[in-house]
Image (cartoon, rainbow, N blue to C red):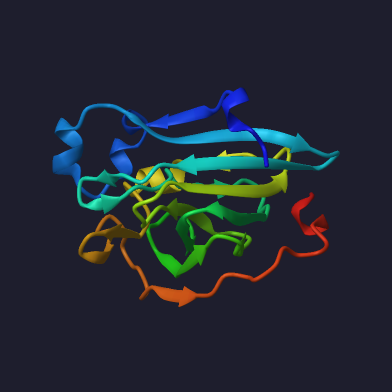
Length: 195
């Protein structure tokens, strides 16, 4: 296991996320604080890198803590595994920049499970539990993240709150949320992550 105490993470703060939160009333008066920690390129091969993200258990008003959300420029895939805690991986496929979403899926995963990000889907990771979430990912080392589509619509097409899933009204059309299961093992061949 990697000793994260010896590494310096990139930190996502509340001030970086306010525009994508459901509970805007809470966000207006909340004190700035760290929301999650990204330890990038802990290990790296010629094409693939290994990262760890830690998302402490906390609430963002009435919404469960989450990542900012992004898509991969160029259609790269990514594989996640849960090291500690539990996660909900939220994926959405937009038709283009017009606010019409073609597909939305949520996958709840516990320690030891694996989830592959589908090509062309923006993704957000949610910590729905009362314990810190630690997850690892493998991805192409040169992948670039695009936050613009999620930012423009002030969050993903659904928010996960204490009242359950709530549609984001900043989208023109959003299908019903569907649910899927995580994978039980890491794919043996990770070459699909490379360009």
